[in-house]
Length: 525
Image (tube, rainbow, N blue to C red; front, side, top):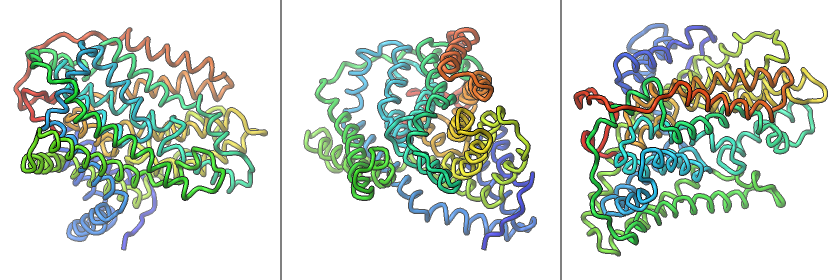
């Protein structure tokens, strides 16, 4: 039986161990396991054997046995297999050829990646895998680093899903607000409140703007600039003769089927579960997003196999080989994901979120509440790797607190509730143990540690702008329609003021490179 310790500073030790070792050793699996073991040692008072057993059972076993976790795992395997079949049949090559007829430069390739992230808006997991895998060959052809590709994918996954009016996130977010209002004895339309608070979602909106400016300008700074310069030093990839355009259907149709079937499944499930006359967001929110993604991935895989074999591009034996190959190459990423899930549970058992909440204190000026809430949500989500868990912990506390500070409820309440959701997205965006961070690395074939290191400076810059030009002045009464444009201008100013176009540098030995490309690393699904 799990022993829950009193929340304290030591509850943060496992995440410090995991992140510190990852930065020092660049061995993600070892680092996550070490963090998990550190948590077990705290639970069992430093007894090594009991801690080791506890690490395996219940934490690792529970991470594997969780139905939602297994749905994500199966979805990832099926998408990987679909992409492998499409690639082996020549569909991916034809699709890349079609895209590069228009995306012929690094800049247009990056903008195309950013735009593709806006299209797959309904779920962050699907965004990471579909956009990352589809655009990876384009990025390699145009000498865009895997780190840059992973950043563009990650910065349009959760940020898009959390502000889209129809997504697997919105129903959950609105439900939390509705519960908070009900528990506080307030009769407020949660969805209307959610919509009114959208302009105060400074971080996800500014993250989207910052990513667009990075893609459009071709400028970078920090570790990302070094990764881009290394990639630019690679020899140009000579494009092979363009395959027939119709061959691209072997890749386009399975991807379209994934998107369409997932959307239809969300609608069908939600319509059956939601009450009559429910709003669209309530219908989507009543559906099981994991089930919908599974339905879409099954149809997508079946269609890719039928197209490959039916067009005689692959034999059944070659298709079987592609299926196995695609799934096998996903093993390490899934192991990272499993350890991340287990570590998130362990940190929850240690009471890290309760400790951070207690550290915030009780006497908080009303004007500072949105900013403090954003920072606290960001810290909890970064430490635990879960945005939904952070929202669940904070919303019932922060929203009633904000409602009690002003009567009638106004900007403070709107900005505070928005800060809970936005801070959770920041942590989801940056945490090495966040599932979307792992899946962004997986989908793009980028080294996970390299993705975290290169993305972090950009996310920190946007987070600082979101506080200085968003939550702080909003708490002091500044209107959002002035703050949001100022924040966007601030993002543009940093990109063009600090960023510089990459220049080709001598390429380090392959063993030390993190910007894997077609010449140094086999493409992962």
